[in-house]
Length: 101
Image (tube, rainbow, N blue to C red; front, side, top):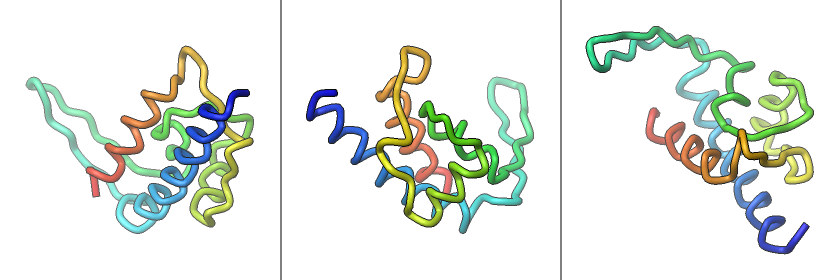
């Protein structure tokens, strides 16, 4: 892996760890009704949903991923990106977690 990709992963892991704290403090256990284009969706924020909201690939189970991130212990070696889950998507998703709270 080249140095830039390694640095990108280290930076995004720091952002994921920070986002996990925000998620825990402001979203876990809460329900929101999002209304858009005449439609609506109810979202219940759960610990096991956090991994999906980050947009990264990992071999960790969803709940374990969240637990490590909340403790600030998620490592760059535990995540990766694919064409289905690219780095740019993860950056956007992490940014939005911060905007929700």
